[in-house]
Amino acid sequence: MPTFYEKIQSLSNKILENNDWRQRESVNLIPSESTPSLLVKMCEISDPSGRYAEHRTMKGEEIYFYQGTDFIRDVEEEARNELRAYFGCTEVELRTISGQMANEVVFKGMVRFLNRNRPEGQPMRKMRLVMNNALTKGGHLSSQPMGALFNFVAEDPGTGKENVINFPVLKENPYKPDIDQLGELIEQHKPELVVFGKSMFLYQEPVKFVADLVKDWEVRPVIMYDMAHVLGIYGEFQIPLQEGADVITGSTHKTFFGPQRGIIAGNFPKGSPFRKLWLDIKGRAFPGSTSNHHLGTLLALLVAVYEMNEFKEDYQSQVRINAKAFARSLKEKGIQVEGDEKDGFTETHQVLMRVREYGLGQDIARRLEENNIVTNYQALPDDETFLESSGIRMGVQEMTRFGMQEKDFEVLSGLIADVLMRNKNVKEDVKEFRKNFLEMKFCLPPKEAVPLASKILKSVIVYPGFEDMLREKRNVI
View 1 (tube, rainbow, N blue to C red):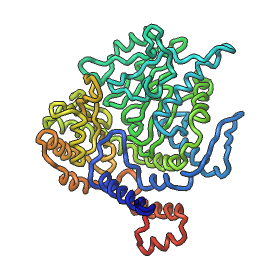
View 2: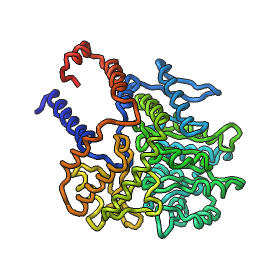
View 3: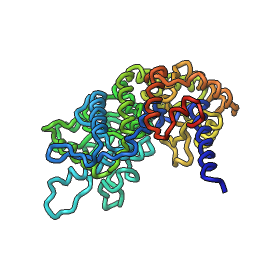
View 4: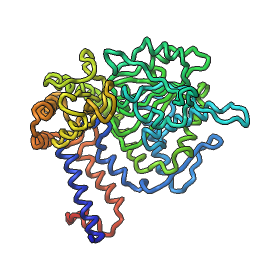
């Protein structure tokens, strides 16, 4: 039996091996992932990571239920202010710890809001009808009845299925909505909640169209936009809060620079018909869904928002330029790329390949991984099941942050074509290619970041003599 130390040592070796592979030898193209900066990572392991800071608004005052929270209280307020500036909004809720939880909190808040005036003794009702993107057309799982929407939308007694209507899509391009049919469906069904946003995400959502259509209704639907995938290109890609959306949700670690958390934001000024909805959303965040809202990642999020507000214009522009260049180059290499070529195939960070002529999506994704190119197999709109997927979904955001530009994605497309079309082993070529992209951009440069990170690390470690061991360059971490 291995000793306690041997178990720890074995795991440590595997951690180092995995870190080297993911950070130095492979190219990550999964569109829902990103590597945080050094300082964001250091904040995640700082003292708040083991603490609590429960709080809620009571009689107009924010009440904290733990002592020792002054620092993290200020951090949370500063992060809200920075995110208000980023989104151009009035309200931000930070206590959700994932994008899926953010969606669920909004759904819970909607149910509470709709039942505010119910007669005493009457049971709470669910949302009567919700409109969203179909899972098979790129909709995110968290906005589906099998996901976070579960138990919050009423059932059709005739079918026994949830009252969810999907956005119609164009026959010639299933990644875009059919606006004419959409208008007819909304007028016919009068949903109480409209949920935009996708996980297979190439184009803008028709927020303004819907907002203009329903603005004069006596009781209009709440318009929600799940921006999990495109939160980090908010503004450059789309500005839904200016187009009529009431609330946006998202995760902070895909195109955004942050740790793994969730966020809810919106415009609910005093006098807004949905002001009480925002109060219900806050109440469902705490105490409704969270107690400990992961204070280490909250601190890390503040640093990430500083980075995003400083570098967003250059970063966002380069992401979209790179995605279009990547898609175009793959097409030129002979690979079928989804989307409309007239639009550059994509308006986001995502690029979709149709690979069925070379094998199932999951098999192609494995072949690419074996060649150090990490992707995500994906069922395309005409696939019958995710288990027989025809697509590969990729995102350029992480490698853009490591310095890749258009010409580099052209090189990468050639390596992918070698794997798909010629069954060539390019693992060593990818390793060599990745050596050019090891320094993270759009954050403090190493000469400024490393000394700060070192001070934070030293302050976290409480072993006596730790600083002496570092000075002696012993292998302690």
